[in-house]
Every structure is written in C-alpha cells, then in structure tokens.
Image: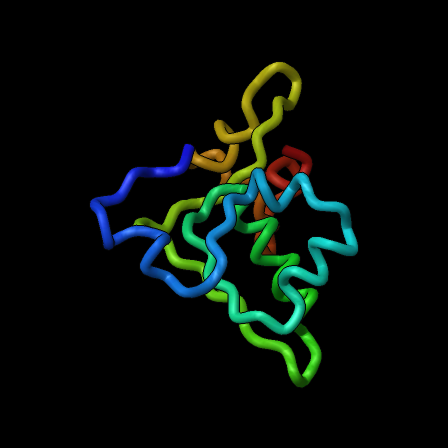
Length: 115
C-alpha cells in the first residue's frame, strides 16, 4: 500500500529514488546490493520489512566510504517476532508481567530458578 499525496508534495518532488520494500524484494541479490551501495538511504516505518531493509543498507554501507541508513517512524514500539509456543502467542510472554520471570536474578531460590 503506497499512500496518496497532495499534488507537488509527494515522491515526485523528491529528486532521489522512492522504492517500496516489495519492489526491493523482487530484485536479485547483486542488483539489490548495487542499488543501495554508497547511497544515503532513509527508511520510513518500523515494521519487519523496514527494519530488515535498514539492516541490509547498513551492511552494504559499512565501509569507510559508506553512508549511514536513517530510520524514520512515528511511534516507537516493540518489534516482536510472531510465532506460537505450545499453542500460545509468544507476545503473551513478553507483553505481560510474566516476562520478569524470564530474567535470571542473583540469589534466586532453587524453585524460582527451575520455573
């Protein structure tokens, strides 16, 4: 989904290349690397595909002559993987007070350590 913009206030005003991650994903590995190598890249958004693309940009431009990749987003939020553990969504474990039991603490009792 690419948003619509008022006339003369959208991607046509920008002098660089505007690319959706779906278009980037269609490129083969060498073409994708050549596209982002040595470029200043701004990633809009904070979902999985945006962060994956930002990592690829950072890896392609990590040498001395490379440029940083900038990620711009509205609200900070946790980017959690989405899968199930024994039929329960894994987010239930990280988004609740249960997450405190996942961290090991010094001098915790045997029973607490087992749980």
